[in-house]
Length: 235
Ligand SMILES: NC(=O)C1=CN([C@@H]2O[C@H](COP(=O)(O)OP(=O)(O)OC[C@H]3O[C@@H](n4cnc5c(N)ncnc54)[C@H](O)[C@@H]3O)[C@@H](O)[C@H]2O)C=CC1
Ligand SMILES: O=C(O)C1=N[C@H](C(=O)O)C[C@H](O)C1
Image (cartoon, rainbow, N blue to C red; front, side, top):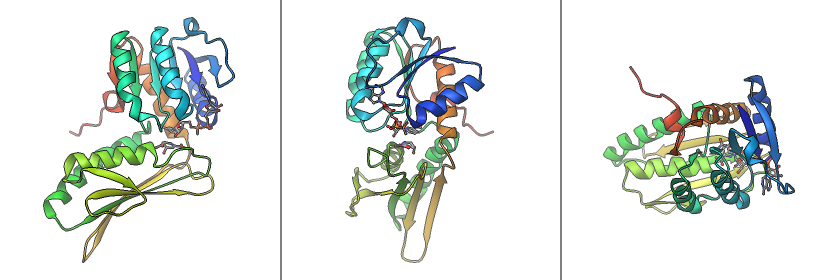
């Protein structure tokens, strides 16, 4: 598979390594200085760039007939525009705020736990996310997906960053050293506390998930997410 990388930073480089190990070829490494984009050479594009460039990168690929997988966070207020463009040009687009298998299992666990706790009426929730100091956006895309999962199962209507109003899901963002990504959901009650936690040890899981998603999207048409790729059903 011939892959065009949009963004050749920490994730772009990790994706290159994993893609090459799986027998794929990197045919373009696009960054903010690229002038010519060789869409015709790519079977698929993988975008891990910056919030300001994600929308034009993705729409450009779709207009150029290239299926695209994106993990860039911090631009989701424009998701509708990208989805409509993809459907209009009959392209293929997959977005995930987190590509790792572990976090996608954690997303399911989070929804299940929120649903159970909702019925008890006993606990107050909070989300804590910790990432490296270079991260541009807060809260993390993963924390937003976790908050949306909780909102979908409970009476909470919205999330808030670094605040603790009674009727919102508070997300607390921490930036420390080179932490790849840790997410904790805590339910505090008057007599006890329940928490679930996911810690990434490196960026490898994110990068592997993105390459697997790029292999999966070839030949497809539509707008997808990681749930479409992973088979997380039980027995
Ligand atoms: N969905 C997921 O599983 C994950 C998502 N991310 C997200 O991916 C994004 C990138 O993360 P990192 O690689 O750690 O950041 P980074 O800062 O190391 O790399 C970003 C790269 O984008 C490039 N860039 C800037 N303007 C561009 C443009 N117009 N077109 C193409 N590239 C451009 C920069 O040159 C830079 O090398 C962030 O939004 C981050 O939150 C990161 C890890 C996992
Ligand atoms: O910027 C990062 O590094 C990460 N970003 C994603 C996010 O915002 O959730 C995924 C992962 O946690 C690492």
